[in-house]
Every structure is written in structure tokens, then in C-alpha cells.
Amino acid sequence: MNRSAMNNLTNNSLLEVHNLSFVDQGREIIRNISLTIAEREITTVIGPNGAGKSTLMKIICGLLTPSSGHIHKKPQLRIGYMPQRLQLASSMPLKVSRFLSLADSNKKARQAALEKTGVAHLNGASMQTLSGGELQRVLLARALLRKPDLLVLDEPLQGVDINGQAALYRLIAALRDEQDCAVLMVSHDLHLVMAQTDKVLCLNQHICCHGEPESVSKHPEYLKLFGKQVAEDVAVYTHHHDHHHDMHGDVVHCDAGCKHDD
Amino acid sequence: MIDLLLLPALVGILVALVAGPLGSFTVWRGMAYLGDTLAHSALLGVAAALMFHWNIQIGILFCCIVIALLLLALQSNTRMSSDSLLGILSHSSLALGLVVVSVLPSQRVDLYAYLFGDLLMVNLQDVFVIAALVLLSLGLLIFFWRKLLMISIDEELAQAEGLNVRALKIVLIILLATVIAVAMKTVGILLITALLIIPAAAAQQLTRSPEAMALFASFCGILCVIGGLLASAWLDTPTGPSIVLCAAMLFSGAFILKSLARNKNKF
Image (spheres, each protein chain N blue to C red):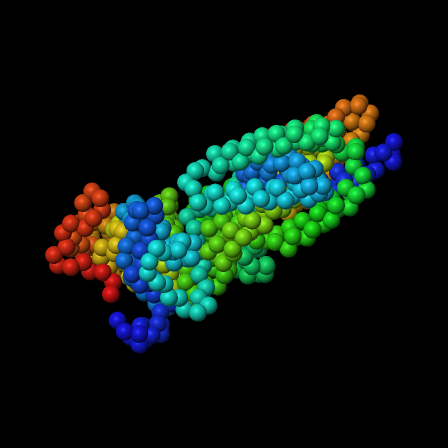
């Protein structure tokens, strides 16, 4: 890819990652990852445990420095990061309102963000008393307060049931439209992703395959399992692997050539 | 007696003012062992100060900062747990301090005063040095408050939002070293972390925001210092331990109040 082609690409892309690898103590966590995130695009990263999903999110958010490869970000790209959970100790008395005011001192903006994520009633609650799902929504509100161009969500659905997942998916999709931001999220489920996902990346150290999800309605067995309400918010991703992994995670069969991101 | 207690009370209040917020950070971030380590290395600072004729507080501050930076360097360059590293640094520096102090001319060193504090012996020069250090750290604390709070809530979130977490941790450690340098005068090396943690833990029971907890911890600390001073004057008990005992009683009181309030809510 020549220089000018890359610049053309950057026109509507927020972030480009080229040949990214990360090695921790001699162990390769991710290798040779390239991906592009365009404006308003929703990307879901799926993959088994230990595939390097969180590592990739952390590198994109600037929490880890890649061992090799490049990240090109749009100048002044604002990333709203929503971690899986907070390290917050139980010893700090902290209300939701104060937690949010550390990100934005404007009270109206904070209230609006909480309303958008559907937890306005938690404004005066103590952070430590929130349930997993409530905390996720508060963290999402905080990420929104930063008016992000790109919202990065690290496994937003851990410990949330399928109905809760569908509700959160609906919320994220609405936020994308309202805030005009791109979304990059990690999903713990290998087959079900958010219905509005534009692009799915299946990660297992390298990008195993990528593509678009299909509507659940094409899969009657899922439709029956979830019911119509949920089915509108989730989609099915069919993997098209042309290789598999041995016990060490190495690719052992790859005759057709792995479909890596170009 | 008022005259005799005026300077000690002033020093105690200054120390409590800065120990409140720093103690809160110690509680929030689980830095008690780090506090202990820095406090233990303070004796080495005392030894250095006596040897080179520095001001004691400056000697302690210098030594604490050297040990803190050494710890940060070790943490990022070895795969050992912070716990083990702290244990190694803490006790090696205490031992080295004890050995160095023992070879200094004996009439110059009152080990007991350094280990348990000698608040009743403060002079006007101590007050000036301590006041300057306290004001400086309070200024830094207020300036960095929001950022320090963020890294105490979640370091990754703070870093993702563009804060320099590493630099802020160094700021916090230097502040902690400063508090230890000034607090050694009041309660001594062995009891410093008590003065940091107990008032903060008492304040935690009764407050609902980090700022309120920090301020109330300062207030509790001031009560403890004054209570401990009066007790030691009336009952002729050692000042440092009396202050810490006052803090322990205050904590028990706050704990009981909180438990009562919680039970009342149940019915």
C-alpha cells in the first residue's frame, strides 16, 4: 500500500492500525493485526479467552505500547473508554454524581448523560452499591461526557443476561446515532453480536476472519431461543475460518491463505 | 503549661492537616505498607542528617524520596511482587539506619525520640520548617487533587483519559514522603502510618464524598493530636503513643456510630 492510498483511506477513518504485535515476556499476545475504524462505524471484536481482545483495546486506548506496528489516529481523536470494571476501593466514599463530575463539571451535562444511559435515578447513589449492569451504564455515561469520536467498550456485557444485553445493544446503537461516534467493542460471545454491527473481527492472536453479521431472522433456531424482542437487537456471526489452531495457538492449516485485514 | 504545649500543639495541628488527605489516599490506594517502608527509611534520613549536619526533616525527606524512587525503579524492572520489594527496602533501610545511628557519638542520638516521637521537644525552627513543608504539600495536593483522585479510582481509566499516571504516582509518593518527614516529630517512625490511616478510617465511616473524608480526617487528626498532648501532659504518658491511642478511640466511636445508624435504618 503506497502512501497516497493510505492518505485516501484516512479521509473518513478515525483510526488505522498497521501490523500491530504485542509481546509480553516473550509470549506473543497478538500478532500482525491491521484494522481500520471509520467514522460512525460499529466494530465488534470477538474471540476466545486469551485471544488478546483486551490487549488490542488497551493498545488502541494508549494503555499499552505495541511491540511493533503503527497506530494512526485522526488528530485530536477523542476516545471514550469504558473499562470492564473499576479498581475503585470500597474505602472511598464516592457518589455517582461526584464520579461523573471528575469528567465534566457541568451538572446539566451530567444529568443528561445519565438520562441517555437510563440511570438518572442513580445520580445520588454510592458507586459501591451499584450492580454490574448499573455500573456499566454509569461508566457509559462517563465515556459520553467526554464527547468521544470513538467509544471503546471492553466486554460491556459481562454478567448481563440476554435481555439486558439486548437493551444495552439498543442503547449503544441509539448513542451512535445521537452522538455520531464510532463504536469499538469486545464481545465475549463467539456467535452473537450487536445487530447494528458493521464489521466483526474474530481475533485469536491474529485476525482469524472478519465480515458482517447476519440477521437472527435467518437463523430460526436463535429466533426461537430468544424471542422476537431480543432478536431485533442481536445478530449472528458465522465464522469462515480457513485454518485452525494447534494447542499452542499456532496456525497449522492455512492453504487458502488466511483472510487477514489488508 | 500552656506555653509548653503551644508549639507542640501547633506542629501537631499542621501535621494533622496534611495527614488527613494523604491518609485518605493511603487508605484508598492501599498504600499502608508503602507508608511503613518510607517511615522506616526515615531513620536512615535522621542518621544522614546527623552525619552531615542537615536539618532533620530535610534529611528524612531526602532519604524517603530516594527510597521511593528506588522502589519505583525496582517495580518496573523486576518481576517481584511489590509486597516483597517493600519488605526488602523497608527492613534493610531500617536496619541500616539503626546501624548508622549506633556508630554516631551516642550523646547526640536519642533513638527513643525518633522511634516514638518527641513532640514536646519541638523548637521554633522545627515549626518553621514543618509549616513550610505542610503548606507546600497542601498546595500540591489542591493543585493535583482531581488527577490524584482519578488515578485512585481507576488507573487505566485515568490513563485512557490522557493523565500521566506514572508522574502522578511519583507526586503522591513525594507527598507521602513529606508527610512522613513532618509526622515523625509527632508520633515517631513506628507510629506514623497509624496517624495517616486511623483518622482517615474514622472519617470514612461518617462521610459520603472523598473531599469530605479528607477534610474530616484532618479534623479527626487535630482532635487526636490535641487529645494526645493533653493526656500525655496530665497522665505523664509518652506523647506519640497517646496521640495514636486517641485516634484509635475516635475510630471506635465513629465505627460504633456508623453501626448504630445502619441498624436504625434497618427498622
